[in-house]
Length: 136
Image (cartoon, rainbow, N blue to C red):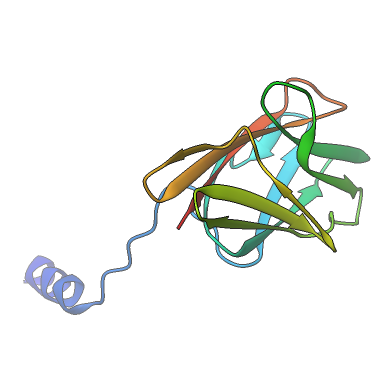
């Protein structure tokens, strides 16, 4: 009887489906000496991302551009202080990262259908790597 009531209650409840690693506005990505948490994050176009550090005094987050080591975004978080927000917009086949007044195209973003994937890393800790998936 209890199982039947539980099944009925679950069937009547609204179903919320989230993508693994999906993140809402503002998206906060934590970092520590082991890496970024979560290492792969899915955000909607127009979402801002903020990086924080949990156990290191400083983390530098850099997004690479293909071909030359130019950055499409950079964010620095220090202990107790999050990075400035970086807004990611996917439109017209390009991923644009905006920090403050500066907007740059992420040339290394892999764009397929209505999603872009862009890798990022810590300038100070080379084994710390992550991936943003921006959906349109």
